[in-house]
View 1 (cartoon, one colour):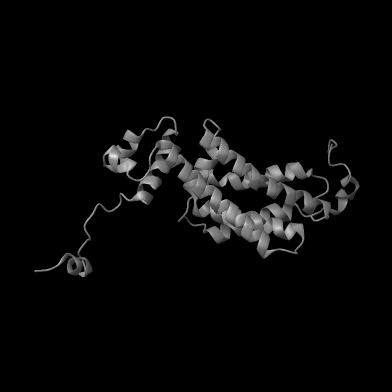
View 2 (cartoon, rainbow, N blue to C red):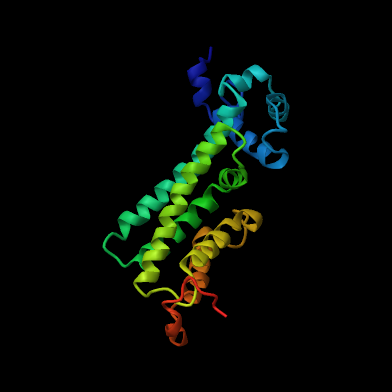
Amino acid sequence: MTTDANAAATPGRRPRGRPGHDREAVLRTAIDLFIRRGFDATSISDLAAELGVTKSAVYHHFPSKEALLSAALDEALEGLSAAVEAASEATDGERSSVRLRTTVEAAVHILAGNLPAVTLLLRVRGNSAVERAAMERRRHIDDRLAALVRQAAAEGDLRGDVDPDVISRLIFGMVNSLVDWYRPGGPLPADALAATISSVLFEGLRPQPDAAAHVAAYGDDPR
């Protein structure tokens, strides 16, 4: 008689259980539904139906819909925080412009690799304690990038005729817009995407010789 252990080791035999309905599969499906339908409009019943399981099977992995949202937002935030920290450590001692560029490229890689979770993060509006906590954590990440922009501008490595706050918004806008059009597995791999965005942003932000007269006019009307 073949034992369960031998059967599991036999090529072509599938292990017992319900493959595809583990914690990770539940979270992936929940993120997809939250993006398509909206968090408030999605119920645990909807999620269970999408997975083809009972509600109790979902609750086995997550105690509530809010716990699912929290896990999804944590995934995006922890990835972004880790990328920013790693980029900072890797460029410690470098000029702020180098640190900024490295950080932006790292953020693009994280966004491309965690696109659904980051998409969900960018759509939260503070309608619950979970969302407000996530927005506060995201604000800390944005503040670190904005500080690097100001430092790079003060060191003369960014255009002096563009307000550093405007530069920050341009960087955030370009990177965040990826959730609207970038699709992993397409013709543009993450490395090429990060390099392209970095080139477009920072070549365009390189100091201009004819802008020297505007260096002290950050808060003035550029016209």
